[in-house]
Amino acid sequence: MRIAVVALGKIGLPLAVQFADSGHEVIGVDVNQAAVNTINEGLEPFPGEAHLQEKLSELIPAGRLRATSDYADAIPGADAVVLVAPVFVNDETWEPDFRYMDAATRSLAEHLTPGTLVSYETTLPVGTTRNRWKPMLEEGSGLVEGKDFHLAYSPERVLTGRVFADLRKYPKLIGALSDEGNRLARAFYEAVLQFDERPDLPRPNGVWDLGTTEASEMAKLAETTYRDVNIGLANQFGLFAAANGIDVYKVIEACNSQPYSHIHRPGIAVGGHCIPVYPRLYLSTDPDADIVRVARQLNASMPERLVAQAEGILGDLTGLKAVVLGAAYRGGVKETAFSGVFPTVQALTQRGADVVVHDPIYTDDELRALGFEPYALGGDVDVAVLQTDHAEYRDLGPERLPGVKLLVDGRNATDPARWVGTPRIVVGTAA
Ligand SMILES: NC(=O)c1ccc[n+]([C@@H]2O[C@H](COP(=O)([O-])OP(=O)(O)OC[C@H]3O[C@@H](n4cnc5c(N)ncnc54)[C@H](O)[C@@H]3O)[C@@H](O)[C@H]2O)c1
Ligand SMILES: CC(=O)N[C@H]1[C@@H](OP(=O)(O)OP(=O)(O)OC[C@H]2O[C@@H](n3ccc(=O)[nH]c3=O)[C@H](O)[C@@H]2O)O[C@H](CO)[C@@H](O)[C@@H]1O
Image 1 (cartoon, rainbow, N blue to C red):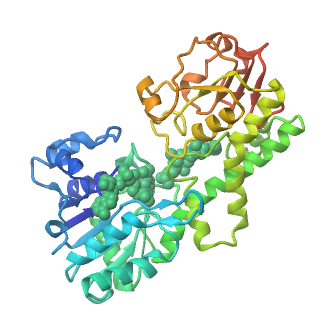
Image 2 (image 1 turned 60 degrees about the vertical axis):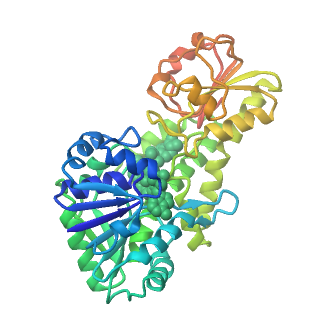
Image 3 (image 1 turned 30 degrees about the vertical axis):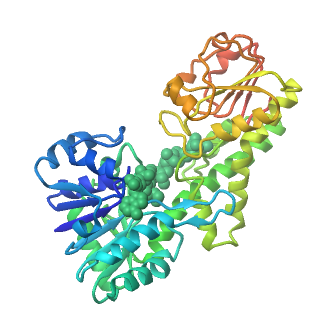
């Protein structure tokens, strides 16, 4: 098969590599010429994706994969085109921002030829493939969907850093606009993916046909929204527990000891590219989903709530030195997308604190580039707010934070035995 992958980012490039590695001829298109050049030199344009560099070193010199910024070079005559350019969500309105996908779709349409299967993998509001991409592709190409070309939607569920392993592990969900589209999408993904045996699944691991583009669009939004709502519920339980002298972690551990309870962990923030974003995409097509909106709002309010709790204990925070422990949105990752560090720093700064940030996996220059004043453990500080559950913080004690009068552990990530004698608030437990 001849396959084109549109957008060679952290998801698209590993996908292009996977398809080429499965024995197909692959051309990737990206508007970033610097990234295209780097890939064509056989080098990974971003670090952190396991096995990406070794696979590029093999596939690029062998001519099995190449990159281009020219759609005319990649699209005409392709058997399948996979698109995975990003969609963002407007921070104020929570409305999707389709500008990159629109541009990619228009460029694709201009060069689309009969006989191609087009599969979108970017996470989308329900109905986008049918109502937005189909007319845009038909108008731009003069071709007819279901006759000249077929359109499918298949959400990408892998986690960056372990894309190749996740591609084997998770069923590939598909949905198209016609039976023939479903058949072609199944045949395509079966030809480019290999699946691990998963006896734990209700049906064999592999391509799972959900029948329509709407169902497969919804599946991705539902699984991520589930996580946000679940964390919201954990935060709600945590607020109640903290106000009533109950340790919510003991409660959650007890609940989850039977197989029908999967309560997540309360925390200072829900960050990352996906979990805080996709509930908003879901709400854009199901605005009546109050349960989703309320959970999202509660999760987003947690940094402010915890900082207010610290203020309640210490009194005025004006002029106090406050360190936020952790810039990353979760432990062990070097990524600050929608990280709780931003609202936490803001809540402290608004109260007049002098705020510094520590993160064991960011250099001082990297922290400065993010707009933070870096802090090295051992420096004087009045209050510490732990934002990221980095493994390095498990053994952190007050002796590494000289002068600390209060630790707000927003992740229950520190060892209580180390904090005997120093005030410590843990999200979800009584102060
Ligand atoms: N990152 C994740 O963990 C993850 C996980 C699952 C699904 N996804 C989905 O994948 C999408 C892309 O994520 P990513 O992490 O790969 O993004 P990314 O920012 O790493 O890459 C996006 C790429 O798109 C390219 N691009 C932008 N406009 C283009 C155009 N008109 N034509 C061609 N290329 C264009 C950019 O140059 C860039 O290389 C997300 O929006 C999401 O829906 C991401
Ligand atoms: C485990 C999981 O579903 N990972 C998904 C998630 O990864 P992602 O990398 O976003 O990580 P998580 O879903 O684990 O965490 C998201 C955020 O929620 C917080 N948090 C998490 C769990 C919890 O019980 N309490 C809590 O507060 C984390 O600290 C983090 O800030 O989004 C990706 C993009 O869609 C998906 O591809 C991944 O499959």
